[in-house]
Image (cartoon, rainbow, N blue to C red; front, side, top):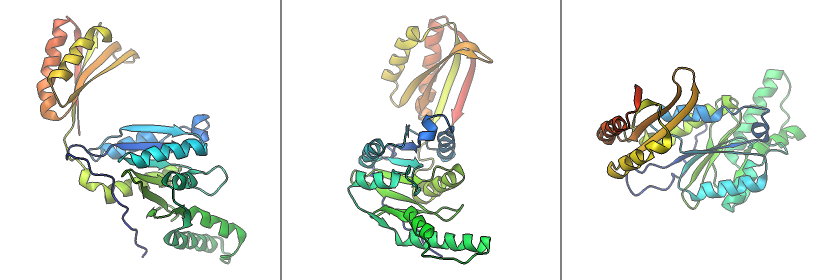
Length: 290
């Protein structure tokens, strides 16, 4: 059984409640051209939410090496936990492995553990096809490029076909976890990373949203109330989600507060009282907890 090494952890924040930010990078011209629809962001939001975490930002990049390198450079310097999906194959339009090395300022090298796993996969394919395994055949040699990672990278196991992803941590403490673009591979690999490296962050702090549907008001008129609540009630954020064609509520604003449950419990009644001062027509109230 091949063991998987544990990568260094991202920089520790100064206060326990300051968990690392979670980011997502999606790489591929096919997403930006509309040839394929992105499925990663909704699933990553679910995987994090199931563990009491949340996605803080996401970026979608085309297959442009300079832009990928610059984005990864920022990620490695950030102290964040970032998942990067796509571009780690061995075809000419796959640049992510090379860009990661450039962003870190380290060379690429064939990871010995990745080499063993890729060779195992090639032997599996030969058995399935009833052919002899030829390790020195040109296409098999080329497949080893999928295990060429930035120096110092640690592996992420791939339960689908054994071809691993990899993790790197930059000098600024940003941990970037690289997985394939295929959801059937990427999602269990992301879940593995969360369970094996970030379980200590799960449900570290309770989170709650309370909101109300508001009819007949404009955001501009409600903004002073929102600003006052954030000024007086530390620890909460006020959010406003307008809609003009909701299938149930029609034109409305969902107005609410989110954050620590105790802070939300104190701020939400103030929000409601303030809305009554505007003679606003209020609809259903909504609650979301993690």
